[in-house]
Length: 134
Image 1 (cartoon, rainbow, N blue to C red):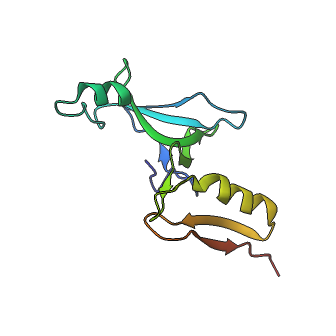
Image 2 (image 1 turned 90 degrees about the horizontal axis):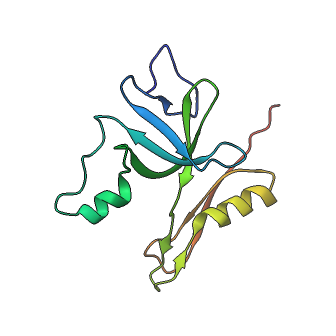
């Protein structure tokens, strides 16, 4: 949670008192799956023990499916999703993140890229450009 006295731009804030936030299988940059525990998460799926076991570990922590990192001050930054898949109108499954990452790495002027195409006949990309100081 971010508060007026404790925030960083781009982060979702720090873990609240009484809650836990862990990063599973962090990569070299410290990014991994975000796992949260505390009274604020669900107790599980009603009448679906199999789904509950998939999403909640033995410590009572929920696997969010989000990818993120914790910085040295304890601020959480969400950087993506584990399973981002678009399904086009033609039934083709497309992972947008590799396309977005390739565009951002190959075109230096691009700040952000978002691939759209869920239930559409074609893929589109929305780009934002980097603004250079004058």
